[in-house]
Length: 147
Image (cartoon, rainbow, N blue to C red; front, side, top):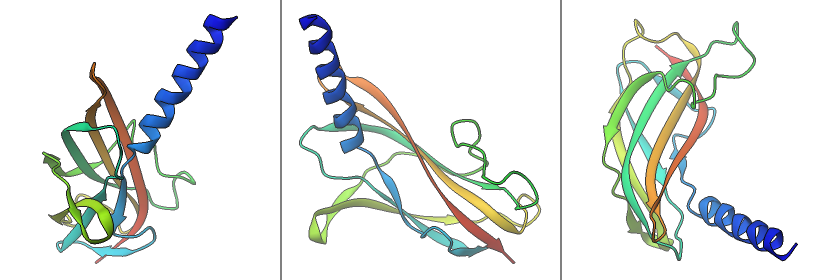
Protein backbone atom coordinates (compact mmCIF):
# COMPACT_ATOMS: atom_id res chain seq x y z
CA UNK A 1 0.00 0.00 0.00
CA UNK A 2 2.86 2.37 0.80
CA UNK A 3 4.39 1.72 -2.60
CA UNK A 4 1.15 2.67 -4.34
CA UNK A 5 0.87 5.88 -2.30
CA UNK A 6 4.48 6.78 -3.11
CA UNK A 7 3.90 6.19 -6.82
CA UNK A 8 0.73 8.31 -6.75
CA UNK A 9 2.51 11.11 -4.89
CA UNK A 10 5.41 11.15 -7.34
CA UNK A 11 3.00 11.08 -10.30
CA UNK A 12 1.02 14.03 -8.91
CA UNK A 13 4.22 16.02 -8.36
CA UNK A 14 5.35 15.27 -11.92
CA UNK A 15 2.00 16.36 -13.35
CA UNK A 16 2.05 19.57 -11.28
CA UNK A 17 5.59 20.29 -12.52
CA UNK A 18 4.55 19.82 -16.15
CA UNK A 19 1.52 22.11 -15.71
CA UNK A 20 3.76 24.69 -14.05
CA UNK A 21 5.86 24.74 -17.22
CA UNK A 22 2.85 25.17 -19.54
CA UNK A 23 3.17 27.88 -22.15
CA UNK A 24 0.30 29.73 -23.77
CA UNK A 25 -0.46 32.17 -26.59
CA UNK A 26 -0.37 35.70 -25.19
CA UNK A 27 -1.19 37.46 -28.44
CA UNK A 28 -3.30 37.58 -30.57
CA UNK A 29 -6.21 37.15 -28.19
CA UNK A 30 -8.94 34.57 -28.68
CA UNK A 31 -11.61 36.03 -30.95
CA UNK A 32 -9.31 38.58 -32.61
CA UNK A 33 -9.63 39.09 -36.36
CA UNK A 34 -6.51 38.62 -38.45
CA UNK A 35 -6.26 39.40 -42.15
CA UNK A 36 -4.85 37.45 -45.08
CA UNK A 37 -1.46 38.52 -46.49
CA UNK A 38 -0.60 40.63 -43.44
CA UNK A 39 1.97 40.30 -40.71
CA UNK A 40 0.80 39.40 -37.23
CA UNK A 41 2.67 39.21 -33.95
CA UNK A 42 2.31 35.91 -32.14
CA UNK A 43 3.48 36.04 -28.52
CA UNK A 44 4.33 32.75 -26.82
CA UNK A 45 4.45 33.08 -23.03
CA UNK A 46 6.29 30.65 -20.80
CA UNK A 47 5.61 30.82 -17.07
CA UNK A 48 8.50 31.19 -14.66
CA UNK A 49 9.35 27.96 -12.87
CA UNK A 50 11.79 26.81 -10.23
CA UNK A 51 12.54 23.75 -12.32
CA UNK A 52 14.58 24.57 -15.39
CA UNK A 53 13.67 23.43 -18.83
CA UNK A 54 15.67 23.15 -22.02
CA UNK A 55 13.82 24.48 -25.04
CA UNK A 56 13.95 22.29 -28.16
CA UNK A 57 11.68 24.27 -30.46
CA UNK A 58 8.16 25.21 -31.50
CA UNK A 59 5.82 25.03 -34.45
CA UNK A 60 3.06 27.59 -35.05
CA UNK A 61 0.19 26.70 -37.37
CA UNK A 62 -3.06 28.23 -38.59
CA UNK A 63 -6.03 26.02 -39.49
CA UNK A 64 -9.35 27.09 -41.04
CA UNK A 65 -12.37 25.62 -39.32
CA UNK A 66 -15.49 27.36 -40.64
CA UNK A 67 -18.66 27.23 -38.55
CA UNK A 68 -20.35 25.15 -41.25
CA UNK A 69 -18.14 22.24 -40.20
CA UNK A 70 -17.80 20.78 -36.70
CA UNK A 71 -18.67 22.89 -33.67
CA UNK A 72 -15.04 22.95 -32.55
CA UNK A 73 -11.79 23.11 -34.47
CA UNK A 74 -9.89 19.81 -34.59
CA UNK A 75 -7.36 19.21 -31.84
CA UNK A 76 -3.86 20.51 -32.60
CA UNK A 77 -2.65 17.05 -31.59
CA UNK A 78 -4.02 15.77 -34.91
CA UNK A 79 -3.60 18.78 -37.18
CA UNK A 80 -1.72 22.08 -36.96
CA UNK A 81 -2.83 23.43 -40.35
CA UNK A 82 -0.70 25.77 -42.48
CA UNK A 83 2.65 26.07 -40.75
CA UNK A 84 3.63 29.69 -40.17
CA UNK A 85 6.83 28.98 -38.19
CA UNK A 86 9.07 26.13 -37.09
CA UNK A 87 12.29 26.67 -35.24
CA UNK A 88 13.89 27.71 -31.99
CA UNK A 89 12.03 29.15 -29.03
CA UNK A 90 14.22 31.42 -26.89
CA UNK A 91 11.95 33.43 -24.58
CA UNK A 92 13.46 36.22 -22.50
CA UNK A 93 12.43 37.93 -19.28
CA UNK A 94 10.50 41.17 -19.73
CA UNK A 95 9.06 43.71 -17.26
CA UNK A 96 6.93 42.27 -14.46
CA UNK A 97 8.85 38.96 -14.74
CA UNK A 98 7.00 37.82 -17.85
CA UNK A 99 8.92 35.36 -19.99
CA UNK A 100 7.94 35.37 -23.64
CA UNK A 101 9.07 35.63 -27.24
CA UNK A 102 7.30 37.50 -30.05
CA UNK A 103 7.21 36.13 -33.58
CA UNK A 104 6.26 38.29 -36.58
CA UNK A 105 4.57 35.96 -39.05
CA UNK A 106 2.76 36.39 -42.35
CA UNK A 107 -0.76 35.05 -42.66
CA UNK A 108 -0.99 33.16 -45.98
CA UNK A 109 -3.32 34.22 -48.78
CA UNK A 110 -6.98 33.25 -48.89
CA UNK A 111 -6.14 30.47 -51.36
CA UNK A 112 -4.70 28.35 -48.54
CA UNK A 113 -7.23 29.23 -45.84
CA UNK A 114 -10.94 30.07 -45.73
CA UNK A 115 -12.52 33.23 -44.38
CA UNK A 116 -14.12 32.79 -40.97
CA UNK A 117 -13.19 30.88 -37.86
CA UNK A 118 -9.66 29.51 -37.58
CA UNK A 119 -7.39 27.98 -35.00
CA UNK A 120 -3.94 29.34 -34.18
CA UNK A 121 -1.99 26.51 -32.57
CA UNK A 122 1.46 26.13 -31.04
CA UNK A 123 3.37 22.93 -30.41
CA UNK A 124 6.28 23.38 -27.97
CA UNK A 125 8.84 20.69 -27.24
CA UNK A 126 11.06 21.08 -24.19
CA UNK A 127 13.01 18.90 -21.79
CA UNK A 128 12.60 18.98 -18.01
CA UNK A 129 14.30 17.33 -15.07
CA UNK A 130 17.59 15.58 -14.59
CA UNK A 131 16.63 12.73 -16.97
CA UNK A 132 15.64 14.80 -18.90
CA UNK A 133 12.04 14.03 -19.89
CA UNK A 134 10.62 15.31 -23.19
CA UNK A 135 7.39 17.31 -22.90
CA UNK A 136 5.24 18.21 -25.90
CA UNK A 137 2.79 21.01 -25.13
CA UNK A 138 -0.04 22.01 -27.39
CA UNK A 139 -1.91 25.28 -27.00
CA UNK A 140 -4.42 26.96 -29.26
CA UNK A 141 -6.87 29.83 -29.59
CA UNK A 142 -9.72 30.51 -31.98
CA UNK A 143 -9.40 33.59 -34.20
CA UNK A 144 -11.28 34.98 -37.18
CA UNK A 145 -9.78 35.24 -40.67
CA UNK A 146 -10.83 38.09 -42.93
CA UNK A 147 -9.76 39.67 -46.22
